[in-house]
Length: 219
Image (cartoon, rainbow, N blue to C red; front, top):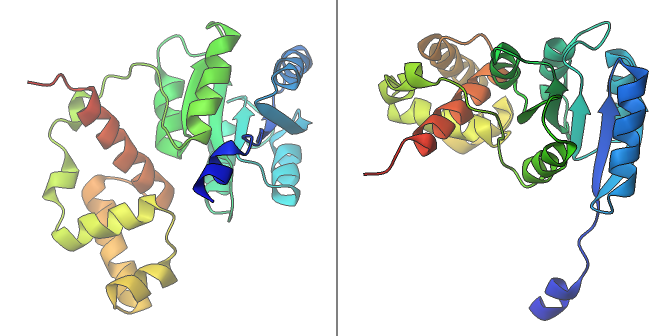
């Protein structure tokens, strides 16, 4: 039976696109249409249109423009983080100083690709993100060396890890055998210690911290 599973062909990755520039949107559509590793489900030129499309027809990965009208990329990512079955977001945009990549990571995006890089990089990033990876260009994460995560209690660390796996408050209450109000109390303390405002930012901080640790030279 395991051999039969291995023999099954890999299913294309369902993907949606949103870009305010019609020429970029057309070029990206053609790029993903030509690649058999992807199945392009929907495209949109606005955040609202894109949001409606991915809620109606969920996809694995979404590529968005950071400056999408009218919500904007940051708000769109934050809204999607609260939706069940939300796609993993790759931001494709201009970012000379690295600020957009940093903001995208904090908002909860799974990856960032600059428009100045070869399109092959965008394809590879989408594949990696679909596989569960976080993919960002080099960011100066030295401020994470004094990692607030090390200041968390054992229970708060466990809660943060459970959050990163998408657990709801009800699931946290069940798994940790505590009440819903106690979950909210612990999460409030957790957000304060990490210096974040909500669940999405806490999850982004968790993955950012892991990326910083993995990037440190061994030995």
